[in-house]
Length: 248
Image (tube, rainbow, N blue to C red; front, side, top):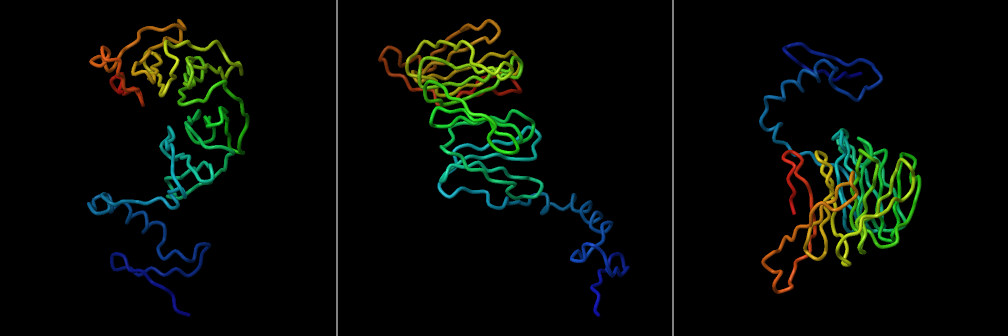
């Protein structure tokens, strides 16, 4: 019988037996080498690839969890949800849905609680075991954001309303009426002062105060084209949380 040996600091180490016989190094040597790698520039600049980090046709949305340990992505074909584990650099699981995903949010710090806006006007709530609950909105949704202060889920759609679904009470509240019939393309909420920003298809941005439940101000982004009645629609709005600024 030939035993594999490893030499470290002129000391030969032989692995005779153990539950993990495929491992050639004991734990204390492996940990020592990992500590030494922090000074290795090549190791610090390495690129680690996640296995199966793809969809057969296309991916629509991808987001990282709040704890930074997982990534959730939606795509097609067939419509499905993927969750990737950064620690193992692999896919944790995949889950198929009935229709394609438009937007999704993670309600917990990890992947265990999420809400998905589907292209058939449905809103699906997913937990560890799968889909927990499904409801529908009157018009086709385009974007979502969540207010963790009052548990309101805001959904921008193709009509002149921003739908409000209160997750604490489990029912729809009175929607916000916007000054446009073209619809809301993107919506986001500021975690500092709580204002909801809605980017509209007519090229304007409306700011709503959830506490007063009324519009605070409406801003025309393309002011130079107002005289010619030519407006470029707003495709995305998001807050830069570090400075509480809005990027359009």
